[in-house]
Image (cartoon, rainbow, N blue to C red; front, top):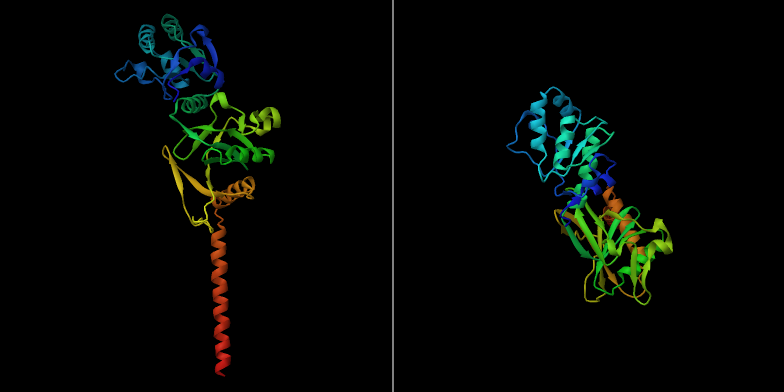
Length: 320
């Protein structure tokens, strides 16, 4: 888990400009929560979250204009605490002079944006939650197949990287090989990415490490994707009963999210890339409400019913 993000990283990734304090952009941000200091402008500081980014929009700045200069100066000075990362002014508003003076004294940068407050808040929250969220490292390969994030797992040497290479050659995209870092984006979504040192790289036994982006182009890689499906590769065992109809409902819980898991037996002659492509397409079809097993059941029931009717007619003929 990343413990902090610098204000400079926030500026570089959320379309913010520096109004003042370029030399203080190394200040750390330790939480993704954003504060809109409305009560603080009335002098209430009992529960002031000073460790958060302080965001001022039209409402806060309009209210500040009606405060006496002495009172506003005192409030702004109190808001500039040692652990306050930065102040952000939205909607292309001129920062209050009292805030600028207080920030200069406390060496706290002031950032600005032409976007409205809701957009600025959303952009900053999305970036900070992604950077500061707890992360888990999983042994496997993450690829994007038909727009779905497929995490391929299995024992070392079973062919995960080779399968990923074949998928890349078939037009799909690599996200991470060997180690996949995942974090929870929200209540229903997991995001997977590659450790920085392994980005775009793929290890193929007998060849070594290859750079997928260099060999196959920028379209063959992606920095991150949602983890939609886990495909676990098992060494084929003739004594093991494998799911043949798709009735098994297996899943893996990662953080608070359940991710569907399917087990694929591996033996010579099986084209794993095509099987994983088919698994991804079938997963998408199921998500849209189509289930081939239901079609099979309906057709089987219809066949049984038709055969039963025919047998009944033949019995009646025999009685006559």
